[in-house]
Image (tube, rainbow, N blue to C red):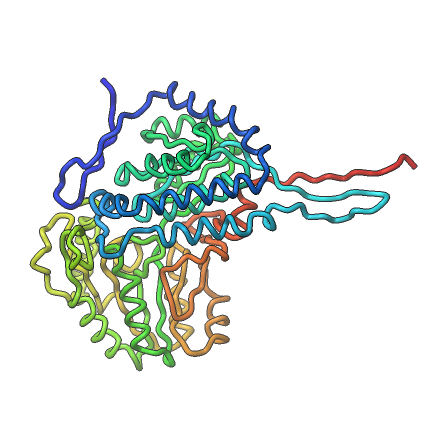
Length: 460
């Protein structure tokens, strides 16, 4: 009997989409087609590859009216926010803009005696495993530069957003990218691991859980397949004593609660200077109490259901344990909280780092807030985590922010903003958040390999 993948909608628990899983031979055949197509694709002029990727991005934009409600059905983001095309376009277009410079040879010498240079070559076949929380934006981070650099790409999306890869590939193929160059693939975990273990791919980019990243490393063990891994996070925010309080509350609460807290770089811990702490908590609580939990297809809804009940159950358990251990939950249950995917957003005080909610990834609409006496205590608490993706500092002093940032174990330091991915900067993490880097010039370097040329002219 053919196995299938099913997307269960968090709106009502119904099966929104279902697709058959190809067997291992069929999946291997897709990889073979990608490999056969790669050399011709890489041989096309760079400007042509860039143009086709830009057309693919534009074609996705033409589908946005269908994509937005589709996303709401699959993972619960309210339609009022308009989907992901803004960020999708910004990231993909930026990588197209910098391609010529980023992929240009590094010329060491061009004289009558020698030519010495370093060129960038595509890896070959790239597997992109994209997550459900921002399925369009996370995928384009790798898809655009991989294709532009001359790789062929297989795209595997999470089951929760089953239709995204199918639609993205259709858009790019309709725009002129050859079918075997960019393919969507529906795979189960076992087949994915088997293909990686067989060295089917020349680069694998995975965005997901720490457990998923470990599975990628186990599958690739001994194959020397390079991996890009963006895994878990427990990102902190720190409100310094000179911060603009209104801006800090608005920015940090949004970063903690947007997308029902299901953001890779969402804020999950907030540390506030003791002189501002009480006022910050009061304003944050007022902000969260004003949110509207409900059906994401309703334009009045500001916070939708979590993507899956098991994700909501994790957050409920963390909150319950924290309260049992002495924390205070400031938000009374919303009427729409059904004990399933619809979950009341929560602010906790009286928390400590002994509590799971301040140590383990929540990936939901909950944030703990702690007072701190000075920068030293804040730095120690921010670094007291197994993760390191971003940290957000609220202050009027950029030099002070930079000094603190240099001492933080994190991939990105924000000042007076949070939860944003700048495509001109490298998106990276440390510790259990993963390894590698996406976007920027460095993103191209990770999706290509260097080749050196040392050409001696003459025979003397």
